[in-house]
Amino acid sequence: MDDLTWTLKQLCRRNRDGSFATQADRQRSLTLMARQLRDAGFNQMQARSLKGKHVDALLSQWQAQGLSTGTLKNRLSHLRWWAEKIGKGGLLPADNRQLGIPERQYSTNQSKAQTLDERLDTIRDPYVKMSLRLQAAFGLRRQECIKFQPTWADRGDHIALKGSWTKGGKPRSVPITTPQQRAVLDVARTLARAGSLIPAHKSYIQQQHVYDGQCKAAGLSNMHGLRHQYAQARYEALTGWQAPAAGGPTARDLTPAQRQIDAQARQIISHELGHERPQIVTLYVGR
Image (cartoon, rainbow, N blue to C red):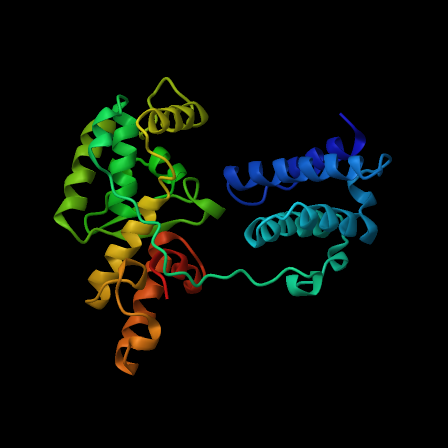
């Protein structure tokens, strides 16, 4: 292991910001940067050696690869973290546009929603099947629906999600608004009892592999689409009309009163999905 990779690993171990998943993503990203800098000819680096020329070299590689705006923003956030932890936060401007990175476009009316169909019956692992049903019922992320502890989470009129289950380590709640949600939660409680949807003899990573393998074998892909379906259903329940991505009216078709309802619905859905910015909801429900 070269000096840069080693010292970046040590930097990550000393600064455990965010959830376990966030920490793992950050370390993978920084390890990739170390390799890319080495490939660019910077062979005598350590973590504290980071300079503007290294930032420029990484940006040039990433842009040449044609990476999406979202991927570029994620990598830049990890690069900023690195710079800040070594006392060089000023190496990168706060605004990505100064680096030639455009704003991410959230406006899309193409639906990515998915529903569970008869393929769910081909899932053999009862914990994976239950995770998928919870994912669909409450708009959960994969990590959340696997780590989910039904008995602990069930608060009667809502479910509570621990920070250790969620992206970014931020706890949140999701309301129980339909009989179908209550029914799914009751079945989950019976299956998991006082535990989670990770079998007692498995770790989270092992169960994640089971989840991925079972979904692939069943022909189920991109199950993040279940969150899209949840968001669109919630939008319709909150507004009284279908989401733009589901064929409903677009923003320009709404009256001033409807636009106010639309804005309130997006704020609620943003919280339920675990996003801080309501504009990201556009990816799920359209504009």
